[in-house]
Amino acid sequence: MSNVGYKASAEQSAPRGLLDFAVLATLNTMFSERRAIARTARAMKAQRLVAGTSGNVSARHARGLLITPTRRGYDTLRARDIALISLSGERLGRGSLEPSIEWPTHAAIYNARPDVGAIVHTHSPWATARSFNSDPLEVVTEERNYYSLDSVPVVPQQPSGSFDLARAVTSEALAADAMLLAGHGVIAFASSPVAALELCAVVEHLAQVDEILRRQPGASGGETSSSTSSSAV
Ligand SMILES: [Zn+2]
Image (cartoon, rainbow, N blue to C red; front, side, top):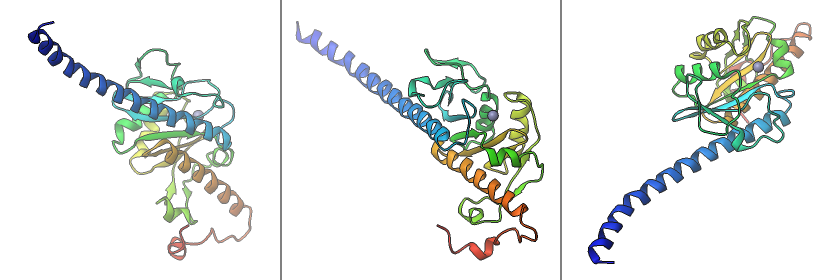
């Protein structure tokens, strides 16, 4: 091998090495994101915020969004099961399962809210029962301060997986990070899957408190925000 040939070979390999590193870094990041979604979905089931394979979890991605697959059990859900799709629903990559049918709503939220990094949708029982009441769920407990939740709106009922549901949710999404879907469940937006799941759990708690207060004749409706603002835990 001549020196000239060696030099040319080294110059050619340097950019390729950098490219390989960038590709590996991107793949590693995407695997971490898929793993976070799978872990959050398993937690959602473990916390009994969904029954069976209902509900879904997603996270924003540079090419669209990563979302849990449809009709796939959560207990054994793995990172490689998470689907990658564009914001118009086109499946990207190989080997992924069919995305959740609720992908239109997730995509619409990512379009409307650039600050949102993840979305969780649950069918928890107290919140689902409360969703049959069209009045907003007013937050009168400590969570009002702790999660900056004044009120949880109720989105009018639309078919699951429909673009009508996506439009209805988006119309409320600029003013709320969590909402009840009439006759259906809860949807919440946050910076990460685990934070969005926490918000869904908070809404479930609020719905249960709301029902307990309704059963108490003459209940005051809980403490006011001003009286609880100094005791956040
Ligand atoms: Zn649902």
